Amino acid sequence: MTEKKSTIAALFLALGLLGGSASASELYLVDAHSQIDHFVDRSIIVPLLDKAGIRHVILSTRGKVKPAQITGFAAKHPDRITAAVRTKGGSYTKNKPRYYKTLKKQLAMPGFGAMAEVIMWHAQKGNLAPEQVVAPDDKRVQVALKGAIDKGWPFIVHIEFAASLSAETFMIKMEAMLAKHPDHPFALIHMGQLEAEEVTRLLAKHQNLYFLTSVSNPTITKFSNQPWVDLFDGGASLAPRWKDLFNKYPDHFILAFDNVWEKQWSSEYVVQADLWRGALGELPPDVASKVAHENAERLWKLPTAQ
Image 1 (cartoon, one colour):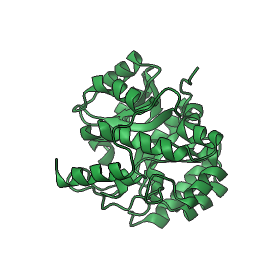
Image 2 (spheres, rainbow, N blue to C red; image 1 turned 180 degrees about the vertical axis):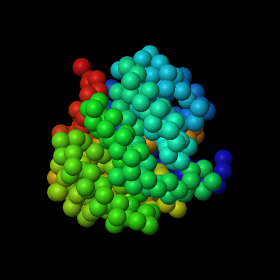
Image 3 (tube, rainbow, N blue to C red; image 1 turned 90 degrees about the vertical axis):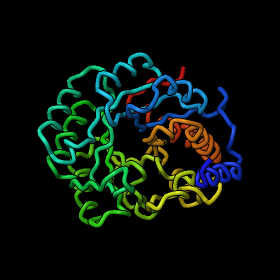
Image 4 (cartoon, rainbow, N blue to C red; image 1 turned 60 degrees about the vertical axis):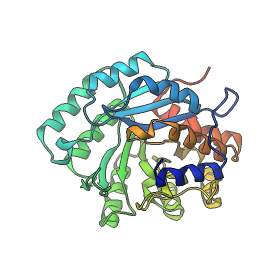
């Protein structure tokens, strides 16, 4: 075990989260955005969802996973997996014709039920993920947005505002996009790296804006040099300012984890699910259910528990 893994394990132990798994009587979860690549063994995903108490996941792809592979996987597990149209990749970053061709092909396929995040500002993450900057009014974004609107799918915006060198400009352009399509839902992944004050301002102004909670808990934030927002109080509870916002805008926060790497499809997923289930359990039951699963089920028209 590496030093980093040992530290993570120590944190999990301190939070009382190692070794836990959900029972049928506990709050069930929906993961509104995670990813797999060709290194992930797809046969482990549904058993891992069971262990984590996650009823459903909206799944997008990276690497060498073909569209037919993810739609075929979802077709085998329609109550557990929704396939998301892929947008990211070299052709998107470089604005190549292949991006538009592949996007059009996927949108014409019957097996997709969502669209993956659309990268607009992505800070470099070591040697694994390069910086990407694509403005909200860029053709690449607008073509994907039209596809999502035509399908009735929420549009997931990936802008890391805290890391962005053009945060003010990107905020103006994002808000213009929200205002232009007031009846269509938009979701900021990773909470947009925004603090509670700015989230409050945006929610008061834009009724069609939602926030995905991915990469916003201490199992991630304590071990990253990126300016992710941490919704927790240093332990296993939501910070008071975020509890207040969840209670004030319960329809606008959506649970998501955004697994990216093979190593995240492991006990780490279960630990994060247990952490979130415990934190949401401290909220009023109706609020907890909305954040945990109801908002995702409503917006993406997912199958619900009987």
